[in-house]
Amino acid sequence: MKIVDMILNPKEIRRRLGLNQEEFWTRIGVTQSGGSRYEGGRSMPKPVRELLRVVHIEQVDLSAVRKEDFEVLAHLKAHHPDLYRSLRHAVRAKRKKSDTRN
Image (cartoon, rainbow, N blue to C red; front, side, top):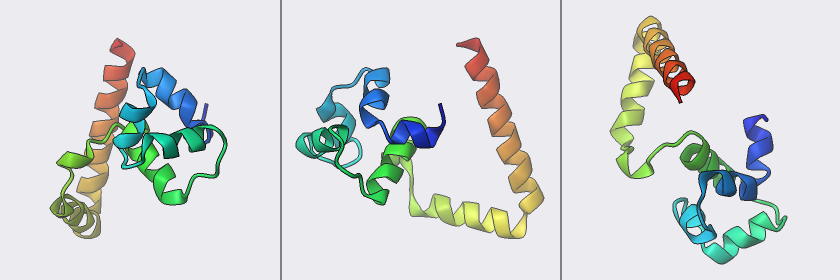
């Protein structure tokens, strides 16, 4: 299943994570009742879809992300693209290795 398909079905993502509606939706700043509407088929705004993807699919802890992190990434991409690609490759390889162990 593609990530886009999963985002279209937030209820399935929530169930796979074993979270109730309140736990799932409040992590991205949506009320339980609002999340229930999205799970029931109401159109989800793009910012909500993106937050859902980042937090629940990519597993990013938003409380740990700072503006400076994005500035460092932008600088690295612009001024040291080879190093950026190398680091990204290393992280992906580590993730794949970890995924095969589980």
